[in-house]
Length: 208
Image (tube, rainbow, N blue to C red; front, side, top):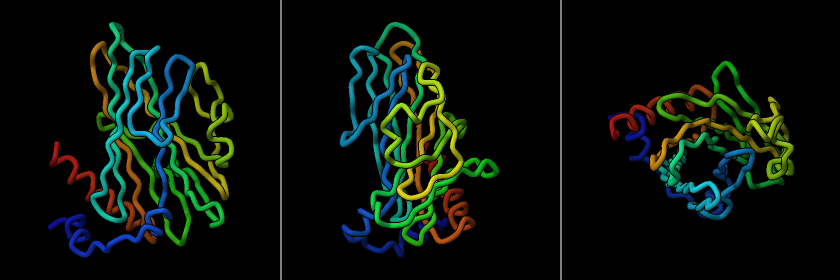
């Protein structure tokens, strides 16, 4: 029995209040110098670009939230796009902190006496570009150092209310589909988070 299966056997039932007090995820897309956020929806059609993005979410354990983003290219040409993944803590009254760890190549959020790990991958490769900043900046052009190139404005740390954003670049052939995964894990210390992540990735590999 692996770690995830052991945790599932002892999984507590989450109250609605606890569910509201966890890290929230908003997917987005950058293409041709434009970007879009999928707020309050898990599917969106971009008619001008002939692209459809769909998001599937699952929760293998109360401490783990796992999302898969499927990007369909319905045009007759290859599309160069960047998938955006924003994470933020919705309770703005609570003190929280977000910071980047270049050594671990992961994002961490500290909130509600918990540590949250944020990570993602595309075809086995992890995050290449990420940033953290105050929540009031994340829906503005201030997240970009170059909107035309899709380069994020790098900030290693932000205090309450803080949000993190990472991008993953992908090239999608005509009438092809690309898939990006992202996950958040909550725990009391970094070693616990990394152990749970390792077990999650092993379980995910077996499903594929």
